Image 1 (tube, each protein chain N blue to C red):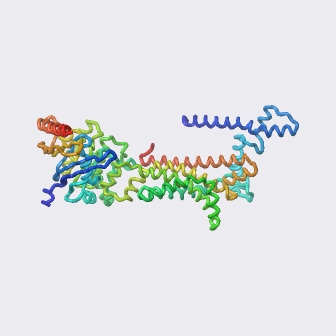
Image 2: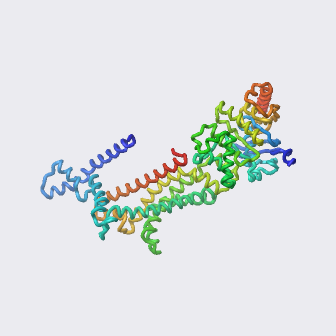
Image 3: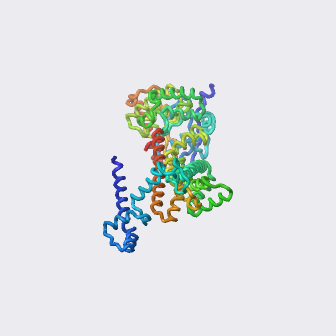
Length: 298
Length: 263
C-alpha cells in the first residue's frame, strides 16, 4: 500500500498533464469546425469538443482507454474479430494483434537469451573470444534497428523465410546483447578466493562453470533478461513496420498512422507498454522466487 | 610406510618468489628453507607483507616459486594438488549462499567424484568433527561467523587430505569466538592427526596452537626464527598463563622485532 501511493500520485499527475495538453492540441480543429458552422464556442463546449473528436491530434486518456477496452474485451466477447470470435475483417482485436507480436517476441527472446548466455560462456572461457566477440556485439547495437530490420526481412524473404521467423530474428538481434553483457559480468562475479578454492579441488573448467560461475551469475541474468525482453518486444514491433504486415501491434501502429487514427495508434502503444510491463513483471516474479530459493534474495 | 613417516611432508629449499608489479619487483619470498614433518602443527607469523600467506599458497600450488624447490608429500605442489593432498581454509568462510551447510561440504566431494552414499557419510563425519551436526540443512546466512568458519573447515576436511592449510582462518572473528575455535582446532588436530600449516598474525594464537612456530619478516619475505614449542600436545586454554608459554611468546616477539630492525 505504501508503495502504491507514490506510483498512483505520479500516474495521476501524468494523466492531469495529458488532459491539460489535450485542449490546446485539439482546439484548432474544434474552432475551425465551429467557424464553418457559424457557431460560437463557449469554453465548456470547446473543452468537451477537444475530448471527443474522431481523429484528434492528441486523444484524451479516456478515449484511448475506451478504444483499448473495445478492441480487446468487447471485441473478444461480442465481436467477430477476436481470437475466440474470429472473423474475416482485417481490423481484428488487439488481443489477436498482441498475440502475433508476442509470439515473435517470445521466440526471439528465447533465441536471444540462449545465444547471449552461450556467447558469454565463450567469452569468459576463451581469450580469443573475449577479445573478438565483444567489439562486434557492441558494434551490432550501434546500427539503427530501423535500418537493418527491412534488410533482414527482405533477405530472408528472398530465401523463402517469412512470417514469424524474420520478426523473431530481429527480436533476437536486440535481445542477445544485454544478456551477453550481463552474463559476462555475472560469470566473472566469483572473487579470487572462490576461484582459488575451486583450484585447490583441482576442479575442471566445466565444474567451475556449473558449480560456481552459473549460480553466481543468477542475479545478473535476471537483470539482463528484463532488459532483453523489453528489447525483444521493440524488435518485434519494428520488424512489423517495414513488411506491410497485416497483423501485430506494429501493423496497428502503421495502419493507424496511414489513416490518421490517432486513437488506434495510442491504444496500440499502450497495448505494447502493458505487454512489456507484464513480461518484465513475470520475470521479476521468477527472479524473486529463484533468488529466494538460492538464498540470494536482495 | 616407514619411509613416508620419517620424510618431511613439506620440504622447501631456497625458495624465492618475486612478483613483478608496476612499482618494480616485490620479493615476497627470499631463500626460504623449511621442513615440516607429518603430524606437525606449524604456524607462520609475521607482519603483513612477510610472505607467510604467499608461502602457504606456494605449498598449495596457487603461486609458482621463481626459484628454489619445494615438495609436498614427496611430489611437486602441482602433482600434490592433483592428488588432492591438502584442504585449504581461507580467511573468509566463502560458503556458497545457495547451498545448505551439508551442500557446501559436499561441494569438493562432488567435484572429486565420490558416490552419493560416500558423500553423505563423509559430510556427516566432517560436520561431527567441527561440532555442527545439527546444522546440515541450514543455510550459511542462518549461522554465525564462527560457525560459518567451522563449516568451511569441515569442507576442507571432508575429502580427508593429510594436510590442512589455513590462511588466517580466524582473523575476522572476535577474541572469544577465536579462543573457542582454537581449542576446537587443537582437539580436531589431535583426533585426525593431520599436518597443519596455519598463518596468523596473533602471537598468542601461534604459541597456543603450534608445535613449530615460523617467524617471518618482510621486504624481502624471509624466515627469521623457527621455534620448536616445548609445550605438550594436550593444551588447556589456561596454559597461556604458564611461564613456558610466556617465554615462547617473548621469543616470538623478539623474532618479529629483529626482523624489523633489519629494515
